[in-house]
Image (cartoon, rainbow, N blue to C red; front, side):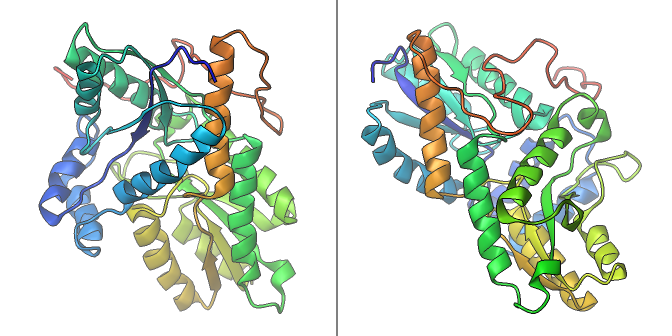
Length: 347
């Protein structure tokens, strides 16, 4: 497929790959945000429970490995680069590597499916900061649209959820509840973006696909990290599990639709904390897998890349989306998902 782009850039969150990297990584993540030091130390312990190694970087490597042949199969011959927001390989280093081989125009796929400051606009700012750090020789970098309602993302997520439902005890399985989880964000951020609405749309589409009625699922949140006095999206997954117990629910599937891979927040907050609480409450809990390297998710990435390449060449290409929202914009408006806090001087 002819392309006006010279390369594909996978943009990730990043994660530590050794105990000595944990605190520097967390300080990068929270720089300029009102996160108490005590919360950083608490989260650091989560990483240390797993040897100080986040699986997220390896999961990106695994995704790139399966993405390459699928791109070639679809006739897209672009070299793949990878850069992270918060830890090595950092975006600036990756952009420098592109400059070294005279790459001039890049298409970026960000590993986040929803619209918010943290999951979309901040990544665009990170990309631009990396370009500015490299200087005038930096390539132009365009971002692929968010994909919360792409049919292949819904299919991959529904497949993971259906597999989890099938692992529940057969008795009263039709009464099981699904808790769709995502990273909580401050209400100041949530009130200025479509994050919560998009999550609810993804959950609705997945629930319909797996045959779960509207009163048997809910979007809930996890992993909040701000000051206790600041309002964040609720309910928290642990509070929701307690509420389910009070409603005499006996079986629950926890489906982390806000996450693309089984990284630390999924492993600790769900497989450790939520599972332990469920056991204490007498709830049977099964956690659905994230999309990871699901073939439909990989196909979606290639589909979105092909869509953008076709648009660049003025070719006709269906912008696939299902549900009530339609396909998201390629170019974010200037006022999209604004920064919700007062920035510190010098940031």
